[in-house]
Length: 185
Image (cartoon, rainbow, N blue to C red; front, top):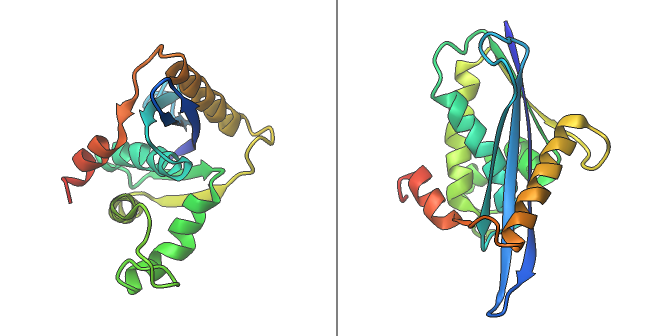
């Protein structure tokens, strides 16, 4: 049995340029395995985007590693625990998503679900992955509370946003990425 731990964090903050304010964001996911043959060291996935929200980055921090594992075969002997400090993401998956689907992707107040395409993609890959794995657990962790996996993600997100602010790296276009991931739906 292989045990996988995935920690993820996302963040965004405004940056004022000479032209206009831009909201930069970043996500980081760190994947650990107790099977050093299949994964000798942790995998760190991170990227930066412009014109995004904090919630979009939290969502992307879930989508990217889930897509990675969803493409893998032979996961029936794998236990995955996904850790996030985002109540939006964890409650969205565990509580809100089933009700949104029942109400044709509307909230309890009958408004369209925000980040709809992302949530529909999450719904698909999350259900696929739960079927493939021995077990899949979501776990909320308190942010900025000394959890090493969460702290590593947070530190890396902050570094990426700083590099975006200082124009050391160029931001990716979030809308283009979501279009590619969802097939433009």
